[in-house]
Image (tube, rainbow, N blue to C red; front, side):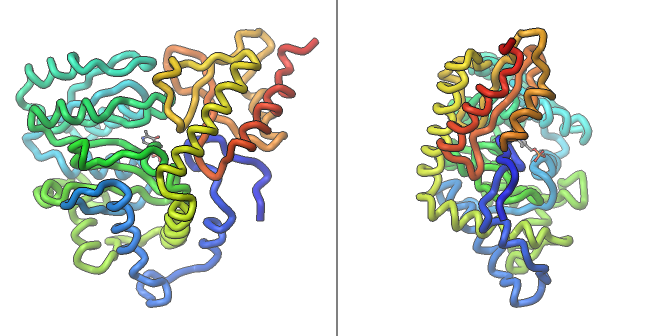
Amino acid sequence: MNNDYLLLTPGPLSTSTTVRQAMLKDWCTWDDEYNKDIVEVIRRKLVTLATQHQGYTSVLMQGSGTASVEATIGSVIPANGKLLVIDNGAYGARIAQIAHYLNIPCVTVTPVETQHPDLADVEQVLMQDPHISHVAIVHCETTTGMLNPVASFASLAKRYHKVVILDAMSSFGGIPFDIGDMGVDFMISSANKCIQGVPGFGFVIAKQNELETCQGQARSLSLDLYDQWQCMQNNHGKWRFTSPTHTVRAFYQALIELEQEGGIPARHLRYKTNQKTLVAGMKALGFTPLLDEKLHSPIITSFYSPQHSDYQFKQFYQQLKAKGFVIYPGKVSNADCFRIGNIGEVYPQDIERLIEAVRHAMYWQQS
Ligand SMILES: *Cc1c(COP(=O)(O)O)cnc(C)c1O
């Protein structure tokens, strides 16, 4: 069955018909027919996609992506630890907010949303505050669409012997990188972003010897990353509490389709082509991207809203939806924007059709 419209949003996103078909059956988690191996296969495949280095393991965690971020922050920072968050957008801010909820000491370096964070600013904080034990950074800041230069921040943090936590929620599977090369200790992502599964769980790829030190540290029972990992390790992929079985089946299918597409490099190329087609087409229609071109990710792009007094996001949104495209409101605090995602089961021809739909929807320029 086909959908009425494409989701040009950063998750949930448009999935393939075959991924959705994988959910058309009710599964019993402990029945052999469910194929309990599926979780172990998924866990291994995720590690292989994240790094070629040895010594990494993975944990799946129920909930949206934020639950996996919260599980990580709440489980890996010891009672005497302190977190530094590099925050240039809503998702960096959310990590700091999680720390505050959990009473974990936390400092932030907060550059403006439209710029890369400054390495020297971060180094100064690391030099001045020896209590900092962990550093968190967001790879693609989905707020603006910016790709942060995480490798240089991770290696800086490593020079100061900090544990590195990477929110790669919206980039993992869509952009090639190796977390082992970068020295990342915990990387978080979720089922419904660039792997192109459906929502329901997130996952953490962890340096095993770091995760092994986290027993008994969690500030929440259901979000205890260590216990969840132990349960999966010792019981052949068993989740502690009810697992999102349909989502897991769909995710397994999505991983196979990622391989069939040619892996992460091929998917990256498709997303990049989507994004370049989008920016070129929108610029030709008079729209201006929020970020400098060199800061763009292939994941999602923010555009300034038209300044015309007749423009309303809601109306623009409805007109595009009627033509088969769902776009996303802005999230930047100091600029009026809307966002268009390039990820999911979306191809350059779809973006070309979108540009035509935008041209027709530009009611504020007519009359
Ligand atoms: C999507 C996303 C999250 C998690 O969002 P949920 O709504 O909880 O799935 C976290 N960080 C980034 C960068 C994201 O893009």
